Length: 142
Image (cartoon, rainbow, N blue to C red; front, side):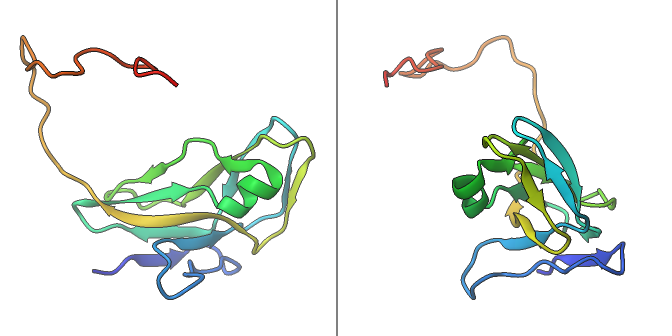
């Protein structure tokens, strides 16, 4: 399997794996920007991808940006569907207390390719019972 990548901008940087066994590719900003504390921004990558059918690309936060600056992918994981051919954009949010300044070419997020079970949704009158039942939202305690 291959992830086909197209540069939409001559200045876009291709995704890279930081190490040989990294599960995700680092992706880079194809623009400069500043995200104020509490703010969010759609950051362009200048890239489009062709995801194989039965798979998706997930856009995830980089742990270093989250830890050092409080910056994360807002809709993490973001999804790039197999039939989307537009630019991969990354919605970053700054949870930090200082403006986050980034430059063109900086690593802003990571992407991984994941299998998707393509199944139909079937309406039913009842669902089977489980030991957990309808418990959710912290019902098992802290």
